Amino acid sequence: MSTSYTLITGASMGIGEAFARNFADKGHNLVLVARSRQKMEHLAEELCQKSGVKVAVCVQDLSSINASATVYNFCKERYIKIDVLVNCAGLSWAGSFREIPLAKMEEIMMVNMKAMAHLTRLFASDMVEQKKGDIINVASLGGLQGVPGLGLYSATKAFVIALSESLYEELKDQGVNIVVVCPGFIETGFFEHSGHNVKKIRLPLSDVDVVVKAAVRGLKKRKIRVFPTSIDAILVFLQRLLSRKTVVRLAGFFAAVDAD
Ligand SMILES: NC(=O)c1ccc[n+]([C@@H]2O[C@H](COP(=O)([O-])OP(=O)(O)OC[C@H]3O[C@@H](n4cnc5c(N)ncnc54)[C@H](OP(=O)(O)O)[C@@H]3O)[C@@H](O)[C@H]2O)c1
Image 1 (cartoon, helix red, strand yellow):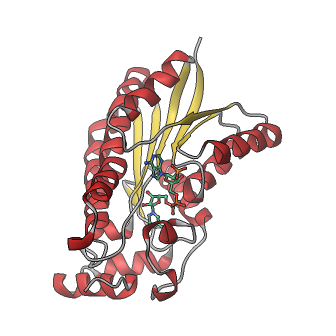
Image 2 (cartoon, protein in one colour):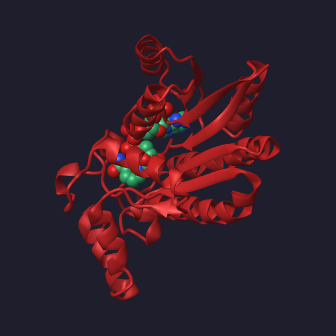
């Protein structure tokens, strides 16, 4: 007999770790997916002790083409049934598009788009069969328009938003709920990892918990997409009033990436 679990990618730190803590608090068993074995093993131990849930650690580099199938088989082999899938793993690269190393481009596209799409495809099929399942996809406000200096990243997040919205409609009568969360700037190691000077960002950074709460609330209310803070909501509303050129220029102004 299989047991129900929540699978979180990018669970080793930042927003993914916050999702893991939140779902463990609510009594969900977890599968943690990322590359950092030690961080996930420490987190797993802590959550098992604190919340009494089962936590499986699946060390995987999601930029490898077979990673999603390996994650899926990891669950099957252990009779782990995924009721909730959180696609949170992601990365960026800050700077002029002309200067991104080609290998970094591949990595960003693999993790942000392909792994997210592959995992959703694999687990959503099982969820439809069970007529039960929730999927949270972590996109970004950056996916709502191009962002100078973060062009590839914003394009991958536009992919996440478009796919999630399509699937919301496709899956809503099959017992499967999907929400895409679009955070603004969140205080994690994300900027340091991408070479984005956080001190230059011209908007306040929010706590990881606002993302988790917005996503969970969005799922409950059957929202198609959610924006975690009121600043995010205002920026989205402003898009209706401003010209597209201004929207893109403003996004670049707020992100303040040196991309000349
Ligand atoms: N921070 C923000 O301001 C912000 C805003 C909007 C959206 N987001 C999105 O939120 C998500 C989480 O970001 P974060 O802020 O928590 O960043 P973070 O602290 O840098 O965490 C990124 C996570 O993704 C995992 N990851 C990266 N590359 C991977 C790979 N090749 N294989 C497997 N896992 C990989 C990392 O784990 P390992 O290094 O252990 O593999 C880590 O757990 C991302 O999708 C990001 O685009 C962030």
